[in-house]
Amino acid sequence: MGNFSFYNFTFYEKTGCSGNAKQKELLKNHNISFSVKSLLDTKWTNDTLSQFFEGLDVNEIFNPFAPQIRDKEIDIIKLSKEEAINLMIKNPILIKRPLLDINGTKICGFDIEKINKLLNVNIDTDKKLNTCSSSDSCTNV
Image 1 (cartoon, one colour):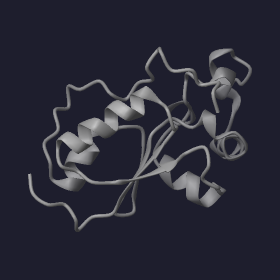
Image 2 (image 1 turned 120 degrees about the vertical axis):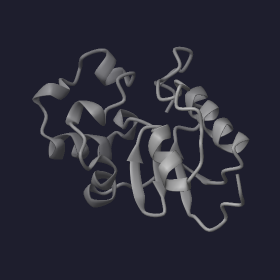
Image 3 (image 1 turned 45 degrees about the vertical axis):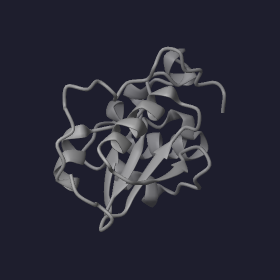
């Protein structure tokens, strides 16, 4: 591992999310530096948010543990990606997290394989850190 100061890495999190805390700790343990922003406080637009979802289906961009999804208040199968993004702009708790911006490459979720490739590191891909921890309370927004 070397000094990776030549890259720009932003980690969009839900403040207080224990899953995001574990993901950030893993990055730090591999000497990867990044800035942290609140996914919930960021002023998203259709253009800025949709970049994270390129190549993904609607069901891959939602946080399945968000109360509205978990309680089946929103039927994501019936939504177009455009409708989904508009809902997320109004209610960012619906966004699958974290969102990562590494040198302009946008990633939805903690995709270790993509992180490894973009930063030329070797984080163990067997780590299961792309899921919500059951102890999290997604209603605390």
